[in-house]
Image (tube, rainbow, N blue to C red; front, side, top):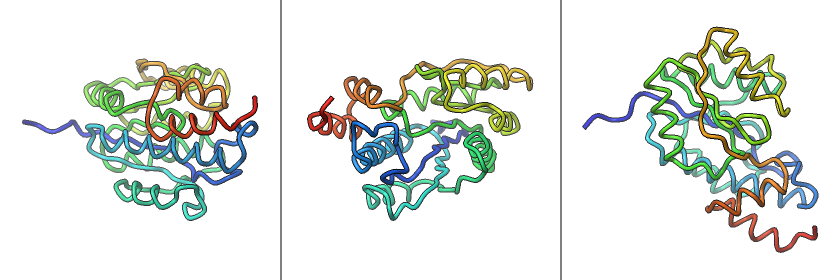
Length: 225
């Protein structure tokens, strides 16, 4: 029986430190509780990648892991990944550079973040299989107009990310147009809601399980809204 096609899943992650991660959850959460949510989301995401049927698993990381919430569990989980530093002045540049760095493993790269902890290994495996089987780029739209995943068969088109405005309600649309303008065919992955606000967190936790959902269920009982 043959193994999976050569594919790399790349996770863009930041250390879940109070005041550094998930700051849009404050208020109603405290900075430390928001960081706890971020840690849970990252751990769930790493678990899904570890259970997906891909050949390479990479995390582009920024921040001081030792200062993070749940740092011991995160360090243990990250030991199963190739961890590379994020580099670049802006977020778009860091995404582009991380994609180029992950391409060193010589396989198509599926880039995701830590804002969609509800996405399981089946979804990631299906996306990686589709990426490896064709020549098209893949873009996973998010409900807020952004995107949760970008798959590229070769690293060169990732350079367009440096010039795409990030964290807007047109980021997905503009990313698709930029890829098409450099000659890429772009296919869509399933749409998901990412977690930016506390309302997002409640919605995602209501239809998912894992550390993230458990943390939100615990904290939602303590929040006055």
